[in-house]
Image (tube, rainbow over all chains, first blue to last red; front, top):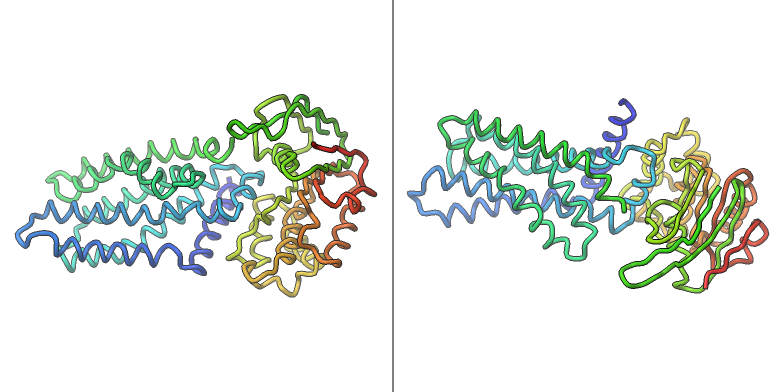
Length: 213
Length: 193
């Protein structure tokens, strides 16, 4: 188990180090999410409801996440380094978990900017919203990383990933918006936690079949 | 030990390799030659387990975790330093005393002074040397080399020759357009058409 967790930590650290040096993903995510929130702010009528503002936030977060997911495996495929990882005798699910953790870190960076921007342009950030975002992050990173690995092998990966990911992410939007605006957020938070659990297990178990023939 | 019978691989409609029978005992050294498109790279990727055969059967007794594969790509992260790359692979390949082993290989392949530089700043020849370090890092039982002399200068080629001469006990498969350099070490030859 120590070896497995050590592999995961080494792989996640590698992704963070690569991002720190290239700044390929996080700056694009930050710019996109802030730009989206600003545009939505002017697009929504002044008397728009809290429901509409929450919906806009979740759309912005989901599309921001797509930026990270599209790029998650592009470098590995283009430089062929995924072959190096596959050849290693480590458990292949460790590759998925390491990548999921790095995607999760990128999402947290983006949301550390997005939520204050939401508070600035729309309304206060509640604990229910923060909890909903935190739980949705896990689901987005888990299932998105698996689908990102599948899409990275295709020529039209920028098109394929949204087609694969957005339908699977709809329950996350339903749960996230519900947790933000409903009178009983606990139900929606529990739903998000259940989604995370199911999809994390499915992604963890099926990753090997996605990266090997 | 490698045994292949009727081994074949298609990519869509295109058949790259077909009906290949092969037998190589543990410690054997196989030189694979053939023109472009004959299937040399495909054969090595099949042996590495990076591709699955679409025809025939393939049996490899060597420990899969101790396969060293050198392909057309160096399989190193351009945004990491030489040392960081080897440290990452050393960890994933469970190399004991990986710092010592990494240092020894970097010294041997003349990259010690460049160990802290990003691989993106390396020349093609330096990348090939780094790729050789990565390939040999875990002391592989099965060594699969695809055009290993590619991009190497005379010094690098000499180092590789010495490594191949010292490959006793390893099962080695080398695909090359420069068979003269490999032939002295080879115990078997396979010409793909």
